[in-house]
Image 1: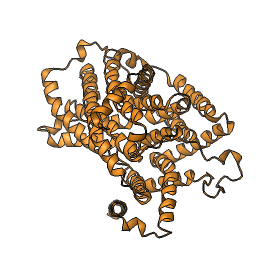
Image 2: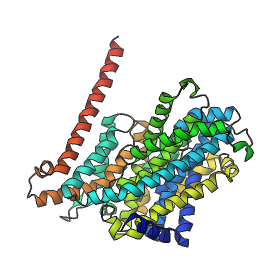
Image 3: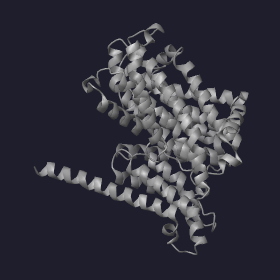
Image 4: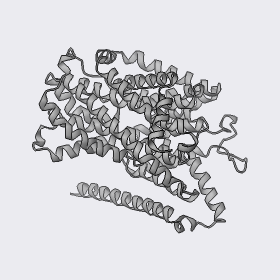
Length: 502
C-alpha cells in the first residue's frame, strides 16, 4: 500500500467517532499531566494501561499516544509561570520562559511554545510518514540474529546515552532483563525466579512494574520537594499575541529544533530530553548575541519546544517499524500493543494497516486539538496549578491501586506495586535512572526469544551474529558504544582524581 492510499485509510479510521473521542481524552489528559509538575507522561500512561484492556486496540494506542505528546505541550505552562518543569524535556523551557514571565511577557511565551510545539509535531509526523515505510521494508530483511543485535543496540544506547553514569544505566538494563525472566519458561515450562510464589508464575505484570517504578516513585519524590512560586499575572488573549520581531526571530529556531528533534527522536536511547538540551545549545551557539539566552530570548524558547515535540512523534518510527522502543514511553507503547496481541515490526503495516495509518493520522488530529486546548483554555490550566498537592497525590495513589487490581483482580499485584514503588524510590535516591530498567524488562523476553531462535537455526553456532552483514554491523556498533562509554567513564574518573590530588 502506497502512502497516499495509506493516509486515506488512516483518515477513515481516525475520523471514527470512537477514535476521535479517545484521541481527545488522551490529549486532554496529557495536557493536564504536563501542566501539573512532578507527575509526567510515564506515570500517566502507567495509570491508563489497565483501561486499555477494555477498549479496542486502535483507540487504546491513540489515547496513550495522545497522553504522550499532549504532555509535551502542557509541560511548558508550569515551566514558564512557576519555573517548575512539568516533564524533563521542558526543563530547558524554564531557562528563557520564566524570565519572559518576569518581564510581563508570559502570554507571548505561552503562545510561542504552543506554535513551536505544533510546528515541530506536524513536521515530525511528515517525517514519520516518509521514513517508517522505508525502515519497515528494510526490517523485512531482518532475521532472529538481526533482531537480537538491534535490541541489544537499543539497550546499550539507552544505558550509555542516558544522563548520569553509564555503568548505572547498564546495571538498570541488566536488572530489567532479570525481572523479565521471572515466570514460567515458555520453552521448558520450568518456573524461574518465582521463589515458590504462585503470583509470580506468569511473571511481573507490565502495568504493575510501570505503576510502581514510575507512578509511586514520582509521587514520593514530588512530595519531598517544596512547592514554590505564585502566579501573579492575569493572562488575556491580547497579551499572548507576539510581535513581528518575535515571530521573525522564532522561525529558523523552530525549523532547526524540528530537524534536531526528528533525528534524535528516531534513535534508540535519546528522546525528547536530549533533543531539547541539544537544540538549545545549538541556538546559543549560532546566536549573534549569546548573552541574551537565559534572560528571555525567544529563540531559547522556540527551538527546544519544537525539538521535544518533533522527537515525541519520530520516536514512533523504530517502535512501529522495527518493534524497538527508543525510550521508556515507547516501551510502554510496545507493551500496550503486545497486550492486545499485536506485534510491532515490519509486518505491522501489512497486517494492521488501519491501526498503523489510523494512528499516524490521529497524531495530526490530536495536535490540532492541542492547539485548541492550549490557547483558549489557558486560564483553566493556570488554575490547575493551584490544586493542593495534599489532595492530588493521595488520589493518584488510590488510582494506582485500583488500576493494577482491575487488570487481573489479584491483590498480589498491589503488593508487587508497593514493593516496586519502594525499589524505584530507593533507586532514584541512589541516582539510578528507571527508564533503562523498563526497556530491559520489555525487550528482555523478545531478546531471549530471538537469541534462542537464531542459535537454533545456526545449530548453536555463535558466529551467526557476525557472519550476517546487518547483525555484524549492529554488533560492531554495540562494541563501539561500550568502548566509548568506558573511555568517557575513565576520563571523568581521571579528572576527579586529579582534582582531589591537586
